[in-house]
Length: 229
Image (tube, rainbow, N blue to C red; front, side, top):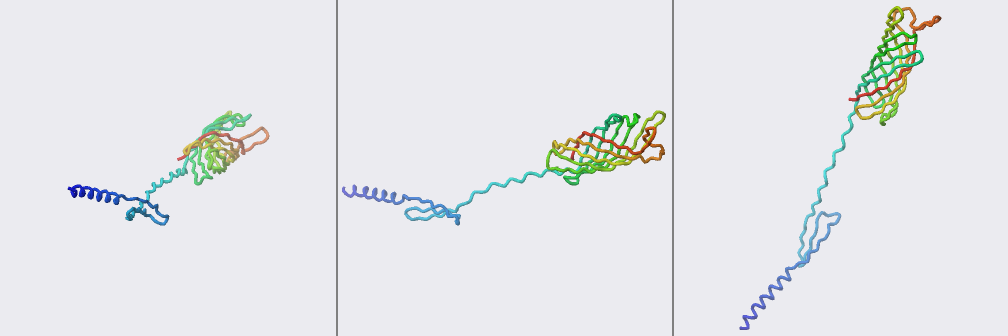
């Protein structure tokens, strides 16, 4: 009878001891700076080595696209020359090349009409080739100088005839450009113009009753805009 009681007690004691022995204390050792492994220590002494997989770095963002270098433009303007004895206005346009940020080249033409120095009605069709020097192209508000030669074909309605004239000369001046967007800018400038008549008519262009001359000059004020491509 006694052995029937002892056997279950002994068996229970053995199971309890096994369960206690199976409990393990887990200690995680952080990896050293020179190692990529994590060491896990347990009690009873059992060592398990777990490889540390580094987290993937996020993909680098691509650099922002560079702004397109716009080297071609279409310029238009309106303006004229106005004074006590001269009143002429008109429109003009030019094809603009920008070989560099500081330099522009305008090849242009236009149409102007009004009263000249002697009070006669006159029309002019100029052909110009100007170089523009931009001082601060990195800014939206830019200053520039303009310089270049020109050719002009005019018609003058005098009292009793129509005279056709050809002039050669040049212009120089300064202006500002407000770059509202990469593809568009507003412009304003003032230019001094000097020219000489070269056609075959021997009569002077201007005559005040005492002296005559074929050389003339003046100032032209223009406002306009430029589309860049």
